[in-house]
Length: 490
Image (cartoon, rainbow, N blue to C red; front, side, top):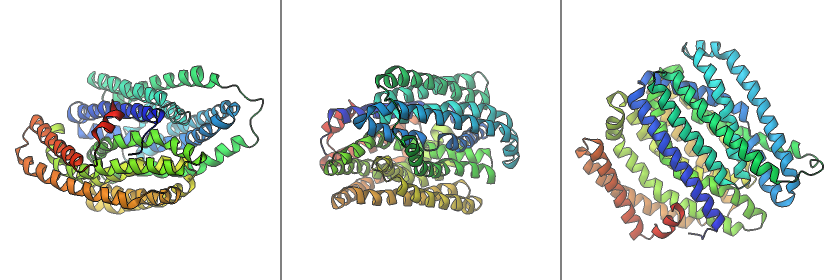
C-alpha cells in the first residue's frame, strides 16, 4: 500500500472514527426503534416521512456546498482572499433555497398525503420540514469543511448530530412520542450539529482569511455553474436512496416500507468504513492532479480499491449467510420479510463500497459532469425498474432494482477513473480473485455453523469465527498488513 502522509492519515482516522460513531449510534437506533419501541407500521411511516423530506432536501441542497468546497480547496492555495466570498455566497444561496423548499412542503403536504394515501403525513411533514432546514445546513458545514481539509471539524459536526439524534429520538419515543417524537429528536439533533458547525465556520475558519477587496470576476457564476452537474448527480443519488422507499409506500404499505428500509439500513452500515476512506481521500486527488502527482494519486486509489475488494467481497458472502438468523434474533419474527431484501442488497454493499472510494474523487478531479450523466441514466433506470418490479416482487423487487442500477453506475465511475489515473488493473483483478476464494471458504464455514445459531450470543460467536477466518486467510495470502491497518485506526 502506498505510504500515507501524516495529514492524509489523520484525515482517514478522524473520518473513520466519525463513521464508527455513525454506525454505532444509528445501528443502536435501528435496533431499538424497529425491535422494541416502534412496530413495523410506525417504523415504516417514520422512514416514509424521512424519505419524502430527503427528496425535498435535494432542492434545498442542490450542488452548492460541493461546488463551494471544490473552489475553497482550490483558492485557499492560490488566492485565499477569495475564500470569504465563496463561503458567504454559497451560504446565502443555501438559506434562500431552504426557505423556498420548506414553504413548499408546508403548502403541499395535504396533497402529498392524499397521493400516498397516508393521512399521518399531514402532521408529520410539519416537523419534517424543520428537520430538512437544519439538516441541510448541517450537511453544508460537513461538506464545506471537507473543502478546507478540516476533516476533524467535519467529523465533530457529524458526531454531534449522530449522538444527539440517538439520545433525543430514543428519549422522546420512550416517553410516548411515537413517530412525531422520533422526528422531534431528529430535528433537535440537527439543531445542535448546526450550531456547532456555525460556530466553527465563522469563529475558527471564516475569520482566519483576509477578504480581498472584491470577488474575482465570474467567481459566483462559476460556483453556480459547477453546482449544475453536482446537482444532477445528487438528484439521481437521492432518487436511488429515497424514491424507491416512497414507491414501496405507494404500491404497498408502511409495514413494507419498514421491511425494505431495515434491509437497506443494515447494508449501508456495512459500507460505512469505505465511505470514511473515500471522504478523507477525495480532496487529495484534486490536489495531487493540480501538482502533477498523477502517479501518487493513482497509487492511493489503487490501495483504496485493494482494501475494498479484500473487505467487501467476503462481506457479501457473510451478509447472505447470516441475514436470516440475524434479523430474526435481533428484530423479531415480525421483520422476517426483510431477510431476502438484505440478501439481495449484499451486492449493493460491494458496489457502494467501490463507489465510495471513487465518486467524490471524480468531483475533485473535475469529472462531475461525466459522473452526472451516468448517474442520471442509471437513476432513471432505477425508477423504471422499481415501478415494474415492486408490484410483481414486492420489497425484494425494489432491492433488485437498486442492485442492478447502482452496480452499473459504480462500474461506470470506475471506468471514468480509469481515464484519469494510471491504475494497475491486473493487480486489482488478482486481489479480487483471492478475495473471492476467501469469501467462499469463510462463507462455507459460517453456513455450516449457522444451524447452531439460536441466540444473540451464538450469532455473535459464529460471526466472530467468520471474521477470524477472513483475517487469517487475508494475512497469510499477504493481502492484509495488520501494522498498516492498525496505523489507520489507532
